[in-house]
Image (cartoon, rainbow, N blue to C red; front, side):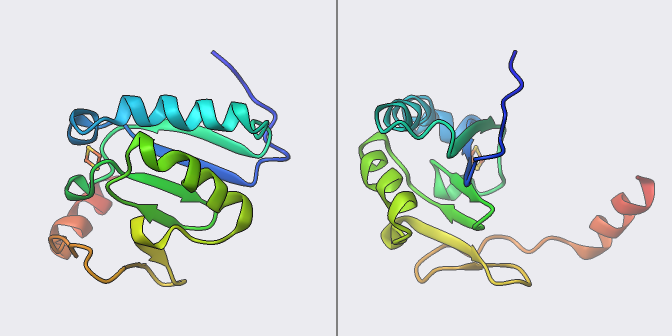
Length: 130
Ligand code: FES
């Protein structure tokens, strides 16, 4: 258990550890990300969290970066050094980018599976129950 001081944190990485991503190597990805952050002395700038399924299983392994609002797909532990470097330089790792936030929603990059449309009626029913 920990309660970290996040005042200097610039990137929060959500690393999917749902079933599909785990089968595709999410545990190795988590370890590689945390090792690289440690090696580069970036613990105060980059915070990581494991998550359950993020609803984009086709993109496994999924990694999300906030507050910049980028979703990455097909991430492997081999991608990690370049990915962490991209956070430092601000140059996007475009070949792994799947979705980016444009102020209104998350827009898929070219070649990214758009996904199933959510049924608004169902979403509204659930919202009313909450
Ligand atoms: S298990 Fe990672 S998006 Fe579903």
